[in-house]
Image (tube, rainbow, N blue to C red):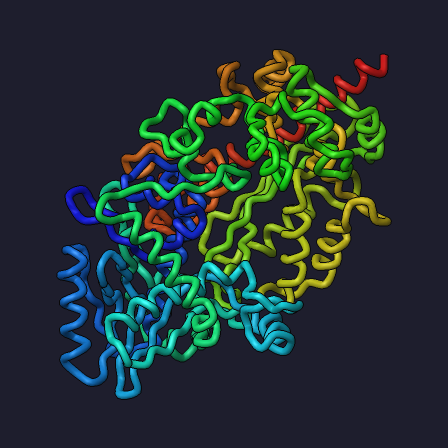
Length: 614
């Protein structure tokens, strides 16, 4: 991204964002406000990416790390000087700069036979799936079916490499370039405990990620690698003409004066990172959309979006209430029917439920267990025997209602130490919910976690067959014989809607809508949670922050819970009892609220179905 006073350049990340939507390049260059800077999950993923890169660089003994941050021309001059000083050299963070095109290469090695360029990604490479792709298409990265195009999941990464290769070829004409991707190997497992501690991630004073420094034993990384290097020359050759053409178009928009490339409005605008609050300025979304972007509720917020949104936008339909039955063209299906409900009830401003909700709610067995899990994955695993992005199931919360009208009983579990938590997580959960009653969840996440933990007990835990069998039996898919699970998210999608939910069925969207509309629900929250909240804000706003290391910290969503857990169990505060206790309190209150949310929604549905029945 260009800095004030410097010429506009097209970096790797600029090229990537422009490929998603060319108009975004203009907003990025001018540093318009965006939602990415506030996205905790993306920042969490980026931190893992820095760790993977630091480990991958240990594959290249003697590599020289270059500093950057001066002008692109100065940084490139330093890179070129080293490349020309010796016939064989390996550079980390080499700068390539030509005209407006700019790239920093993760690993660039020059030898007598030419260049080897390596791009490190924290994405997992599945050898079994890749072998099947290769057998059918001749490539690890192409679709298995004809015409065997490059798979959409891989295209972004391969275009990144291609952009760098094209730039390197232009700077060193005639010198062969062999491109590679370095990825996490799904078939590998950590041979050591505490591998994330081998990398020190550095941030700026305002919290931005800067770099990662390897402080472990490089010989251990080389002996037991988590990464795999793959030749992508064929894929890069296929993509190079298209990448060059796009890069030329983007560069032309940067000089001699910066201009915005026009892109037709459509469904792709739905999740644009420059779609910030209307009162924020400058506002990229509103510059594209004008007054059409200020409409509320907007068709971009239609449930699941899909081709219908693109058609509506192309036809000048912006307001959700202007969507008519004719626009659906007689189509039906789960998504389309849900969209109809959203439009109809939003227009009416009324809550809706299908009478089938009452029947579905009666298909339960007491005691009722409202259950929520917190689990984390990290690119570089903390525990020996775990694969990349191995799962840590570190917390659960359960509100149990023993019989109709009974007061709920709350139980919980939280692992606080730097040990593999999954088996104790499972044992304590079994002790809490046993073999009786319906287990209510919101989404398929809990079922996935239980199945995964069951499969890991043999390799990472005691291998207790009884515990594994209990997990598998409890995780039977809803609707199948013997199933205990009831997915409230599926009930919501099929049978319930409140206009305050917009196009979302998340538990927070549902609870926030009911919180603002129902004094009865708010009163019940006070009785069960012991604290009050602002009627105009959601109950998650009632979670109090705590002071940890002179900073106010809070946990109000899943990524925050993962960060809190890693700080408490593995971070610098793991040896500070007071800090650990505060992290634990934040985690426990957050997870407890998730299961209380399910209970409150369930009780609301009970009142709703009873009142309509009478």
